[in-house]
Structures are given as C-alpha cells and as structure tokens.
Length: 187
Image (cartoon, rainbow, N blue to C red; front, side, top):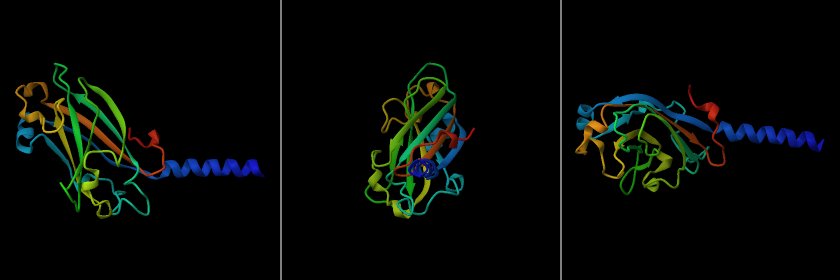
C-alpha cells in the first residue's frame, strides 16, 4: 500500500511539475539594417503573437512571476565576422512602475547555432518594474552588440557585422516550483 502511494505521488508530482508551463511565444524573423534603423534594433512580439495561454495575472492561480524562463535562441543567419551579439528580451506590461518594463537577455553568440538558458523571473533587470497582477501587453526583442545595455546594433560603426540577421526565439514560462519540460519546445 505504501509503495503504491509513493508511486502515485511521484507520478502526480511529475505531472504537476511539467504542467504549469507554457510557450509564451515562438517567432522566426529577419532583421535588416533598414528595419533596425526604423525600429531602433527592436522586433516586437505583439499581443496577437503571444500564446493564448498567457495569463492576465502572473501571480495566481498559477505563480509564473516567481518561476523561471527557458529561453531558446536559434541563430539561423548571421553575417560573417564572429562579432559577439545578444538579444535583450523585454516584458512590456499592461501596467508598470519605476521604468515600466523589465528585461533578460540571450547568451552572447558569435555564430549560427542554438543557444539556451534558464533565468529566474525575480533576477532579471527591473523585474520589479512590472505589475505582474496586470499582465503583459507585448514583448520587445532588441539586438545588441557585446556591450549590452544601450549597445543597440543599429548604432554600431560596423553594422555589416550584425545585419541582416535571422533568428528563431522561443520563450517557455515555467511556474514556481515546476521543472522545465523540453518536450514542450516546439519542433
């Protein structure tokens, strides 16, 4: 009886650990120098591009605000030259405070390939500027050089090392206490 209970408990724990996560977005796009000049190196993941599972309140009934992000960047095309680049991944809320938004970033990369990382929601830049109970309006993805911060790629003196670029970015939101399930990643 006890062994059966533990097996059932183990199965239930596994199911709940992987169930409280969703793909926030999965986008493939190209950014040219002309587009980057017009949009200040930004690509916008609009509300319509976000998952229909995106909660209005990120704190309840499921706590995504204190969970993690699994970020996957697939660099499909990048100019030759091995110049380091990164993408800032910014949450633009329906209602903010302080500076009004918060960001994390992809790993730095110098060539085509797949780059992944996990980030705690409470550890990215200005995460507390978002009123999480009010939800997210959209996401801003910003191409930058290796300096991060205000090192927007369209302002670089050597933009030919950054543009054009084509990437696929996928963001999986994992709730507090849950474990990222790679099976959720779209093919």
